[in-house]
Image (cartoon, rainbow, N blue to C red; front, side, top):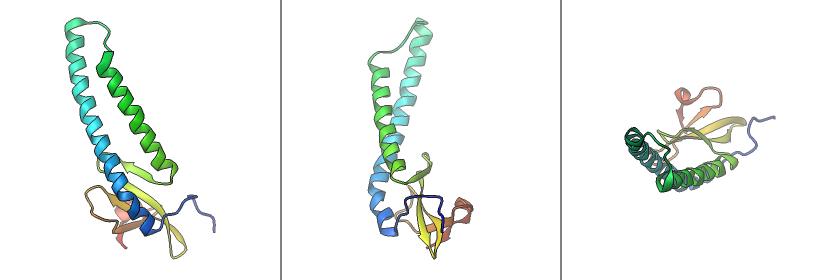
Length: 128
């Protein structure tokens, strides 16, 4: 049978990734907050000076963003499908009864308890 995804996770493999994913989403949310604060500061400075801005604040944010992007790409290259960063919504391609499905997890959930067919999306979630 031909599948859409090359990598398929067992439930145990997907569960083993949850601590790393929790850390990734925590870093993402923290970076987003820092970026919003920096944007506000830079906006105030620009309004006062009308000049070019940059320096340590911008360099630090850029460095953080590059590192975070590299982490995200590692997960994606490993087969994890990140659907929503704000909610921490992740799908893990898997096989159930010979058909390709997604094991589905959200950051607020303690464990992976749901799956859905590839075509159904989040609305089609069912308990494992």
